[in-house]
Amino acid sequence: MKVMIYRFVLSGIFMMLLGLCVPLSLCASSGADAVKAHPFTLVLDAGHGGKDPGALGRGKGREKNINLAVTLAVGKLLEQNLKDVKVVYTRKTDVFVELDERAAIANRAKADLFVSIHTNAIAGTKPLTGSETYTLGMHRAADNLAVAKRENSVISLEKDYQTRYEGFDPKSAESYIIFEFIQDKNMEKSVRLATLVQDQFRSAGRPDKGVHQAGFLVLRATSMPSCLIELGYVTTASEETYLTSDRGVSQLANAIYKAIKKYKETNK
Image 1: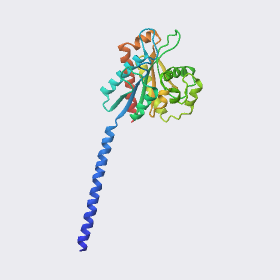
Image 2: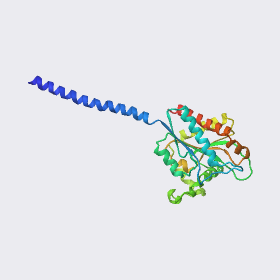
Image 3: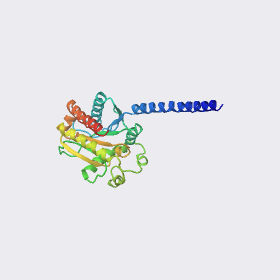
Image 4: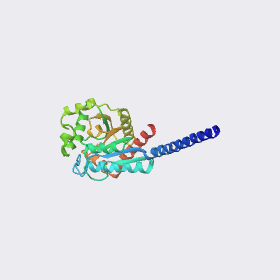
């Protein structure tokens, strides 16, 4: 009788352990599937669009079109060459997307990187050239603040922007004080990405205007390393010709693609 009871208990324990093993094996499998289901995700943001043309050239150059052309070219290179990268776009056509929605798209996608692509401009007739990349942060230099103000001014096209952006005035220097208090845990990685972008621009023969920090609203709400690229000056005739050419789009896109590729390889 004792032997039978002993065997019964052992049998019960064995079945219980077997029952535990099945879920554990399933969990292990699910975990592996989960890893596969969440590849390295990059959000590409073509600045401006739709009713917001962005900076205007002296010819037919429109920032929104230049941004979109380069963004789509970068995305195509990534999709063709890096199969383990998922590319998400904030827009793929000429549509208006609000600044906070651009950041929300990146956050919903649980993106690993956010890259916003823009085209620079300057008032007057001074023929500036070159590419520069920004991260969110201190913006003491007047030139950096001016760029941030111009790019942020798009929120005035959004409904009820005073409420949605908590009274933020893109034209007021005082409003940018809020960025002094933002603790960006991704700053080091953001600067690393921006530096790689500028390295590639320089290798492609672009005048290097460096890495800067400024208070861009589109970067403020993202929860991952991010940067904003200013491809060149559409208000400079030679730059406008370059930015709107197939050669220019291809060179700029290749530089950004190579920078993202190197960032991914060195930040595993």
